[in-house]
Image (cartoon, rainbow, N blue to C red):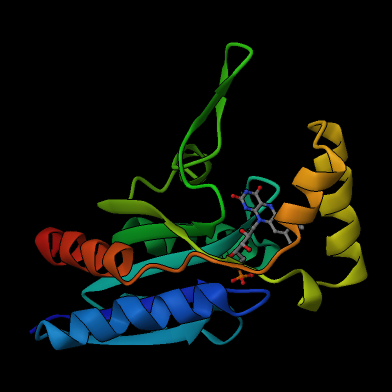
Length: 176
Ligand SMILES: Cc1cc2nc3c(=O)[nH]c(=O)nc-3n(C[C@H](O)[C@H](O)[C@H](O)COP(=O)(O)O)c2cc1C
């Protein structure tokens, strides 16, 4: 039996939910998995495998996960590691000769995880802080969305997928 710690950073709860779903699938498949908020993470060196998951904001992990990685880099380098991002757009984007987004976001942290994945999350405009809402509105303007397209984006979008979480759990088990 292997024990797996899933550490997550989540601003509005969708990454916390995805982390719990991954842990539930791992437990169902006979492993011992638990989740922890990155703000309150236990000692990572005592686990067979550590999964780091974060909501994606402006193509980056949340600052608290970035800080955790910076502080724990040397310990994480000696762990069996997995990483996942939770985002509305999970594929790599190719534009004007440049590639960004998707798993490239995870690669920037240079942790070389055994497993990595981008999973769909949830966006509920009604719960966003004014700052986040303003940030998104500026982003929509910068990519030239029409008023109709912007209205569409502001609708509640819950794209959390059990299949994606189950597939990710299967990849983790293969890497154990
Ligand atoms: C201000 C803001 C910026 C975001 N930036 C991105 C982004 O760069 N790429 C993306 O795919 N999704 C982006 N999203 C969508 C979030 O990644 C998605 O809603 C995710 O599920 C949030 O995770 P959380 O609920 O755990 O905080 C953004 C959302 C907000 C509010």
